[in-house]
Image (tube, rainbow, N blue to C red; front, side, top):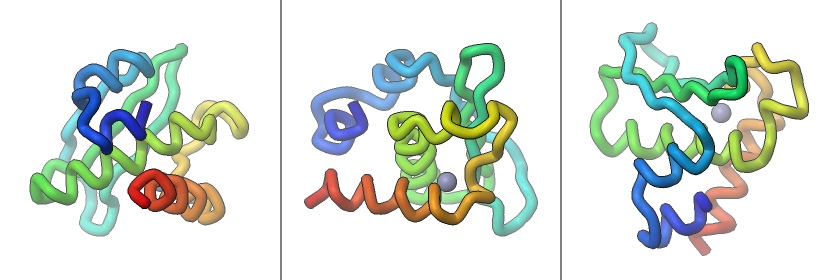
Length: 100
Ligand SMILES: [Zn+2]
């Protein structure tokens, strides 16, 4: 699905609804770009409101990679995945792999 988004075959809105995900723009402390968590079966993607349009999109794609790679299911649901460096790397590698 993320592949379809990156290749322009589906919209951000479609992929969010596919994954049962909500997207919110929130004022976050400087240096925190965004994170994702699962609450009662719904993914919540939180993105720092102060970021540029370009960075926002990059963060959304990154958080969607966590969802697609099941990172939030493998650990406990309250996990804020951006704390786990291995998962960070895997998410970024996955996006790079798709973009090849
Ligand atoms: Zn992350």
